[in-house]
Amino acid sequence: PAPMTRTCRYKRNNKHRNMSAIACARHLANGAAWSPVRASLERASEQRRVERVGSRRRLVRGSMVQVAVSPVECGVEDRQTNPASATNRRAFLAAQITAAAAATNAAVPASAWAALAASAALPKDYTDKARTLVNTLSESLEFEASNPSDAKRFRKAEPAKEAVKVFIKDWASSPLVQGDVAHDDIILAVRELGAFYKANGSRKPLSPEARVSILAKLYTARDALPPAEKTLADRLLGL
Image (tube, rainbow, N blue to C red; front, side):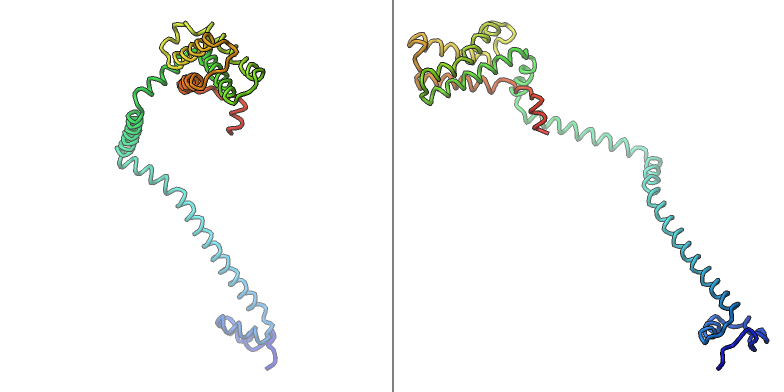
């Protein structure tokens, strides 16, 4: 059939007002140039699309607000309905910390705590000079075990000789460090070294027995001394 125009019988009889959406769509699909019906359908379709999009946005926004607010509301409600629960949790945490501290204290021997307290009370100048003596003298005796020439042995022993002189002058008889394990072992090692040189001469290399005995005392003193403070370079490398 020929396409209908604005003067078609549907318009003359005002039947287009009672036409269903399907009929109007079929009518337009057949090529009818009925602009009022087309505009009405387009407006209705656009309105439904806008309503669907707005509904989805409201739904999503409401869900996000609910998720964000719910934990806060739950926490407030829990504190209001059960105010003793927060106190109970704090008490439980404090009990756990106390139990952990007690277990740590029981696991560490009392002698270790006493040594730690004693090392903290030692003068820093004493620990520095004692550590220097132990390190330089141990290195000298260990180097001597490799049977070097006399010239190399004397050159290696120079820092140790200087460290022994400084320690004996400043801290050998100081009452501040009497009874310290490191102090006593250092004094014993220096006395044994002096007794050997007095009996055999200062240019005589130590016997293996004397060297092992003196090194054992120096190692014990090194273990008893508190660890040296880290330098700036050590801290940077540790990072």
